[in-house]
Image (cartoon, rainbow, N blue to C red; front, side, top):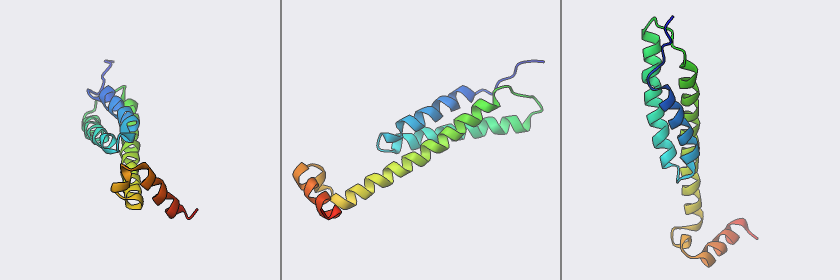
Length: 110
């Protein structure tokens, strides 16, 4: 029996890991890498379903796909967190530390 491997399995896994790690870079990089990983994973999953060939690294594609989904979710949550912080303190307070402290103090009610 021949040892057949899906063509993008390692790339999907690497992009999934990069998606999770880079989601703290303003969220956008995690989303971008996650979407790329999901597209490549879908291609490999379709290849696996369409052929009668048994591939040995399907689990790698599945793990990369799950990591990509987690990276996308974390990226979206991080973007929502940034929007929430900007809505609380305002854009002008992001560059003035004293104003930011004052607005956060007012928001927390201390």
